Length: 241
Ligand code: PEP
Image (cartoon, rainbow, N blue to C red; front, side, top):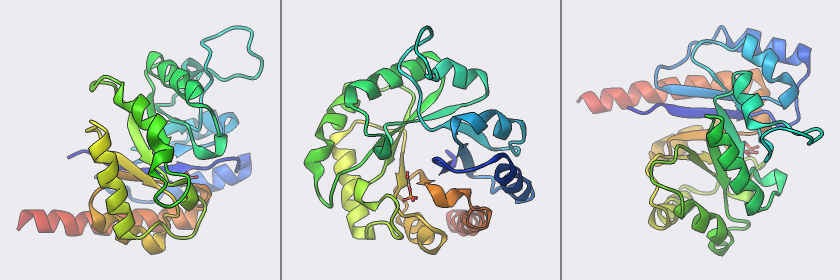
């Protein structure tokens, strides 16, 4: 069974002290067997997090540069990220407002460096499916064997307190499935919190969740893992019957 992603995008948050505190707490938590947590700290803290990463966790970057190496002041290349221990990289998070041309180059750099890209896409407003057209057309042009995941993140739901309704998410998922020959699984992001995680899990259509700033609060991370653990147990009981 493929593992369920729990991705924490810390965005521009954290200090050495806060990160030590976060990691000291989460290292004591039990990790459900079916969960694959990925922490995405700011670039400057990747190495610190890598050195204290709990067993079973993976490291991800929040973006990567479009160049391979050379005179590009301030750029962080995909191969540098791989070199310090990243396995994943978020590509095209809505807050970065990068052009599709840039995203295409970042995807190439990530693959060359053996990073697994997590490509973010989401409509700009409720039911504005047309706003996905260019990204869908690009994703459809990729070979079926290309290793990556899609994070479906409705832009209007990012940073909110709740995700769209279950009916809306099902409709969105069907839309994406019918427009993309993509089999590797969709991760959902946008307003997921411990209070609503069960609803998303019960939908049983996503292969993981992506959580923004809230994921850096150890109390929230703890609750998310607890809910995933309970849900995993219930599911395996149901399958055994
Ligand atoms: C995000 O920024 O990718 C995200 C999912 O944020 P939030 O969880 O705050 O909606």
